[in-house]
Length: 556
Image (tube, rainbow, N blue to C red; front, side, top):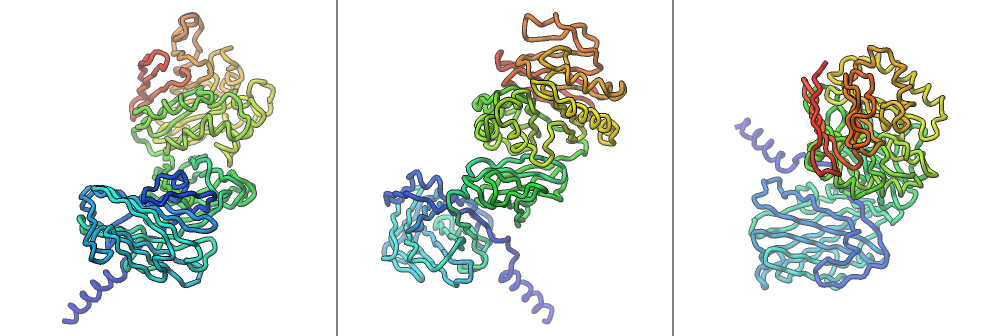
């Protein structure tokens, strides 16, 4: 009997005290000039700028038995709080008994409160049968409208701020959605009882200067660290919430780059995440519940695919076409060989010409070489601000799943910075002695200008590379470059290069190297499939709208 009591106690505690995730968070904008036609259909433009919440879970943790979509949008102005609800109902909308309670048909329960010790909450319930139930607020204190179709319904709610309790920069929020035909209730927050205020989500109120206008994106991707970058409308403090995919709790990290603590001093933010695990998918958001992912690098050998493009020159549409390709989307990493834009005249040119497309369409590791055009314009330092804020170098190496990638840089169109080249030569001489270089299954060089002698300014890179011992030079398996805007290749043992340009094909001497050198066509894709035995390279031409070459490189 005593054992039975212990088992029963454990069972009861398991119901009453389940584990739960930390408070969810979202950004709640305070907007201006809000105009709404209160008809229950949230189609005004300001709703698109509002906080969007759509990650609902089943109340009491049971399995979902039908597909559904629930979206809540919330915003403030200086007078009111605005809430819109949009609910898909594939099982059919139930309006309920007009003489019954608000819970007799499909309904929502909205909870607002203050997490700042003010000890107040408001409960607002309205059903599709037209009935309501409120606590600490009256129907006369707010306005609402509901629209109901057969398999979809929506509502708009306006609550004067004067009808709420005192609050400053945060609000507690949760919503329960009752689905009559599905026989279950959805919740945003992980709660046990309806008024578990301490478990409600937290809405962080922000004014337009805190609004994220660009990004976010993963600026520097390593095996145990990553930098999340984004820009806000004005100077303000910033942070990132992150967790391993599959975990419940987000950790919050503020701007943290040694020597460059920006907190409220700049609108461009870099948040350094440290002590990560290699080869791991992480989820993150910047407080607005727009959850994105990035993957840390790993040197552990495995099969994978990488995609290469070059010379998109600020043509956002062309870059998006490359990124949307199915073979590119299936790739593990993405490499741009330089000349992402034609001239760097400021941050906005870099966003419009490159980073907006990357932020919208790519959430895996990507690497960006500095081309000669990244030197042009009045703001060349933006390249580092956006992509390499910690290292501030355009030459480096990384290892991914058994492939060692070496990225080389040059000194731009002017070719006069001998100190920079000498520094790179010294780094390269030590790099080829590293255990990572020796242990790699394949070694791939990435350069913007090709190593073809005299071709497009490649002489500087030839100088850098030729300074290596012959054994190190011969250790490479492949080099990729851009700059010339057409597909060309120099193969070991060939007398002349192959080129899609008829005036150059078979007429330009090949490089006396022990590995292939390939230059990509502008705005086109090269797909490389790697396994432990070989690299399979598929070269595509946008101009010819087809695959134009296929090369197999066996492991040495």
